[in-house]
Length: 421
Figure 1 (cartoon, one colour):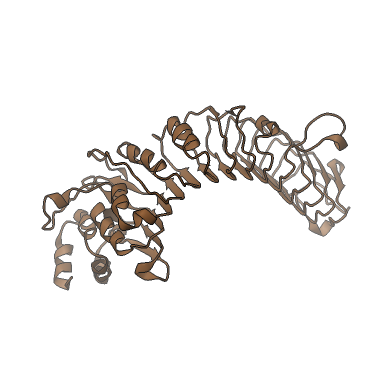
Figure 2: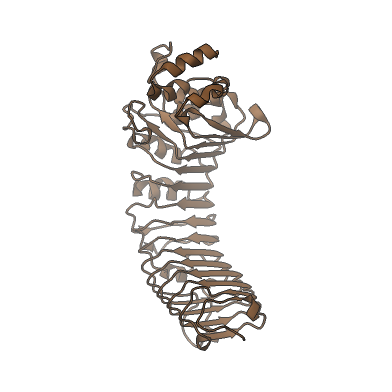
């Protein structure tokens, strides 16, 4: 591309520059950067990351900017050995704004998932991440709020070796048939992440396309706010190790038949209506990590079966290694007992009055910004670090410690009294 060509481009109306530049080759875009100081809209630049193998790279990330399906097709044709592809922050045109000497057939833009499927790399693709990728109408003034593409989608997406799939960002209604097809594009998916505003991904998709279709393969499932209006959810999986349901605000229970015997990490943050009674039903007996943040219904957490005196109570989460409890406004009493608990954090629960922690291996405990905390009981023989910042109601009278390794130098004090014990 000559400098004369660049001058012609600059003479065009500014609103057409991103569409025109999206048709240029990668080499042309690099040359165009020489005059990019005159381009006030930087969205034409496509950021490309690859590993050191260059065109033989197995790991490709395309990020930011505006791109047509034709341009995407041309870029994918360069990298034939891709096994991992990330599309990050792309705005994809559904039609051409400027012809640039193209035949009528070339002006029809295909859906980007169809482009991916027809690319050489599709048969070997193992990881696909669509992060903040959406289609826009090039004739609207705001590129982030374009109208729904008007063309029809009938393709059936297939990526036979796909194992990891992530979709996070805005989706238009016209994409749903392909997204649903994408969820079933492979029988080998082990890691699935759905997040961000996917408002039209309905409960049927969660229960059928995901829970049943991938029940025997999933090892990690992240549904960040995607459960819609699901109230009761059934999960049965012998392979699932990580489950993230954060932001599923309508979820109130797991069905009685739910069972994940090998689940190790569970995130229930911002699940406003979910009770924790299911933890006592052996839903996840091998749980190691539990995260509870911004739950607005939980009033008490007790990790031991009640009955008899304290020495006879047995933990129903015997493998729990880390617990993170934050910003639960109604939580008043917490009792945590685990023989393998190594780290614990309890923060920002403004109405919590009492806390009991018992673990023979816990070395670090953060109990911060619990304004109403008056009583704390610790039986942690190897505890060396304790953070009590912001626990203004707590005094020495309310502290019962069996922590021989804890010295005053290891206590970060935010209480009314300084601890000399």
